[in-house]
Length: 580
View 1 (cartoon, helix red, strand yellow):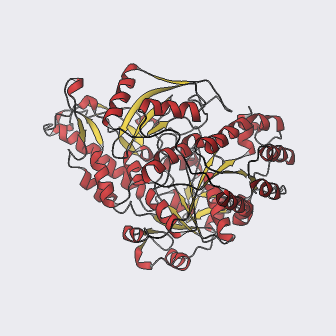
View 2 (view 1 turned 180 degrees about the horizontal axis):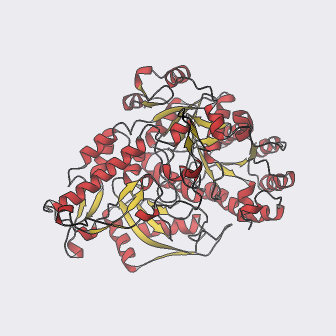
View 3 (view 1 turned 60 degrees about the vertical axis):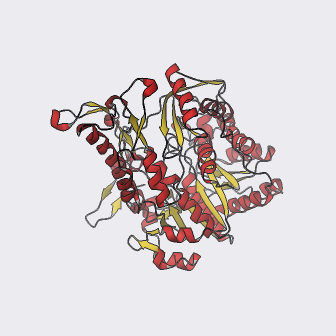
């Protein structure tokens, strides 16, 4: 059935990709509906359960979400991707376009996205609200301060950091070792100068001197807890479990100090109580969308909040969500962390691919992305093929490939790609939602529905919960990354062994470059036989998983030579320009 559908949906090549206006111009020209009216007309959501932030943004009450629990679940669709180029391959755009298209073919659908971080907005990638005619609006609000969730996360996180240093300064009743503090500070910006700093300098009045540093806010455990929490009380309890450091004692006698020990978790929850409410906005085609939570998938777990996903599944026939970067990162963590810990189960996965990314993995650099090169594209197929294999074989999910169409894709390249996918019985569609909105993704929507209706096998995890942390890392590395083995220093191995005993069942969240299956960003395609080195291990007891730093990945990014911030501005009338 899927094979026949795939052949029927092979589209004609469109000669135009680029709309006549920029993304922000398209977004600012959108005819938005008041979000309160749209939510009530579409899903019967009472206006009193939405807290409006202006006319076009609102937060949904937790009490209303709780009232939905007896409703049947809609089908959950995960949008992921092949290993991306620096500009990304269009997961958010595809998620929005697919959601609009599913609504167009009669399937009530809610898209659930992550919130943009100011780091990439002003760095390399720019905004994260989709693009072209597949966007969520108000785009400039969403990409900048939105409803203040990221600021609340930074405030709650840094409150705990301040209380750690204050506790030591005020007498250190808990005997916290200032050398073993693991709670760094955060800010929602790319700033490499803050990766390692000294605090407490300037004399006794300023506290004890020690090494510290900043991570970007989306890597904060507070962000992870927001995304995993099922209620306000659950979030407060999770905050209390955060481990900030160890007591000063011989190694075997050290005890963990938590946020609850410092009596910080209640105040953190107070700062975060509104942030826990999912944000409700709309697409350009006036379809309800939730945008909530925003951890990166390379340095964090890369998924939106459970609360938003739960609400989306209860409201719609379909709920379309995305997980960051390639399927080796976002999809792996979506399934092995989010689904494992919350009970969510996707019905199908969409893997976003582009011919430029395939040529990239076939050896082309940016100056060759727009030049026809069928052989390079064919060489790069190994990357896409491994992602497809991983989702199908390791996770048991049906896959549809969405080829994100660009105007420089040539007929020869498209034909070679579709022939390859058809020959391997992989449902695939060349999607044109960027240029055409939901109408350009209707064939994709039909392929997704067919995949869901034709699926009989249940989703599975790549490793069992009862495995040791070491074996969990090794299984992900060998089965998902194609590695031959993993390695780490003796001290890191001892820490993993100790955490396995103290926190049995915790999944692993591997922080790794998004550019390669290996830990070397320069190794394109589908490298095999490499060794994944684990350099650091960090417990995230509140979130419920263990973070493992692989290779040279940074938890505080830096700005590029030409940051996107250089072209962002505001007119005298208050209109934002240059934001993609």
